[in-house]
Length: 307
Image (cartoon, rainbow, N blue to C red; front, top):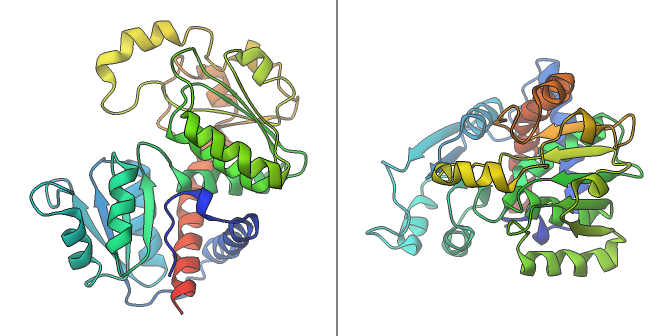
């Protein structure tokens, strides 16, 4: 049995295997072929943090695979509050076939997984967002940019940045990260990525200079500077992130054929200009749709590991 908690647990071959499976399932879905890969199986979906895309994609995905999604909000279950996480995990995992968790703590997610009898999928934590990165890479493959790939990440050193570090270091592509001072990536995660990069051949650089980071990039990406729970820091962050908006001036320093990715929700004229967002909107919303297809691939792949 395997969990899907962070990409650091996966080899290059396994990541690409899931991507290939996701492409196959997407083609079937587009042809209105809904194979019952997981008939009568139940996906428990635990949401301590709400999300439009995560709920719709997982709930739709398990239904299209022949199963059913069980939504559990923070009002229905409280990890680590009252009942220990270990007990919650041992109860729920005896009643469902797979569990997706979206919460504030990678540590709690891993504790939950350690007691679970079924596969656990990370739907987002404070440290990682691996399902989003799989959707991003599927989008890159669909745009034929996987060869000689150079990704520039401009913005906050957060769970998305950490996940890009894991993906790049496992697959062996170039990743250049630019963050403002005080918003750097987690140093321990960076060290892990640099160790993986020694094997994969990835080139990973971090700086405070978005103009240098984006130079000749074939994929440019960012994330909101103001995540849920950080609204009180809004004015300070706007000031601190001055110069880090991905606009026409900055994007012109990337490769002429570069695409722009955003995990959404996007706040126009903060982390990305309205012009750049709309110019790349078709790719961005294809990226969002790919959450559905790649998560189906992840669920089917994990289910196969049990067999």
